[in-house]
Amino acid sequence: MLRKSWNTWNGMLGLAFAALLSISGLARADLPSPDAVVRGTSEDVLRQVADDKELRSGNTTKLVELIETKILPHFDVAKMTRLAVGKNWPRATSEQQRELVKQFQTLLVRSYGAAYSAYRQVKVEVSPLKLAGGETDVTVKSKILLPGGAPPVSVDYAMNSTDTGWKVYNVVVEGVSLVTTYRNDFAAQIEQGGIDGLIKNLQDRNAKALQPAAAKK
Image 1 (tube, rainbow, N blue to C red):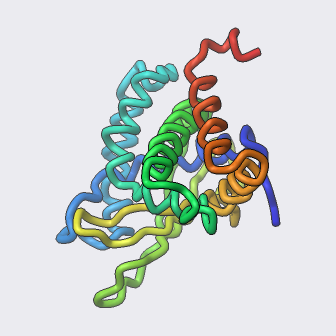
Image 2 (tube, rainbow, N blue to C red; image 1 turned 90 degrees about the horizontal axis):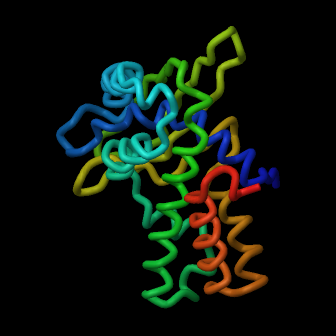
């Protein structure tokens, strides 16, 4: 199984984040199909980033606010966490499960925020989606077009229909699954220190992400 380091995977997620911004319109079941929503809203949201000087300059605080308001509501973070923890999820108490979701959510937001500044000048192409009647679980395929003629990067979004609209529960970048990658890392942490060990590891990573760059060296 292909495994990425935390830094490498976070960089890939930063690249995918530009396209994730385009999902900001997913809110109600009466909206167009997932691919139409992604395609139709991407220009507006990416224009918001392009027009904001602070975002263009890599203001992490403002970028985190943008992620939390525009992106996070359209992620099924609880499902993502459950899938990432995998077979060990039932071993966690209700309190531990809540803390895992909280810390994983913070990890995702901080990872995107830290990596995104390197990937602002991109364009997104979304493949047409044939949505069957009553279908509740789909994959939206897209390509991120990089500046300078670099090869495009494929980004697929696994999404399910909920009472509050379509939500993302996994991201696959160039064939590498976010959920699977974290599952491998989480399993190793649980083997070493149990559920509490994984929680502590996530808390430490999130706390480190808040430190000034000089303090991380």
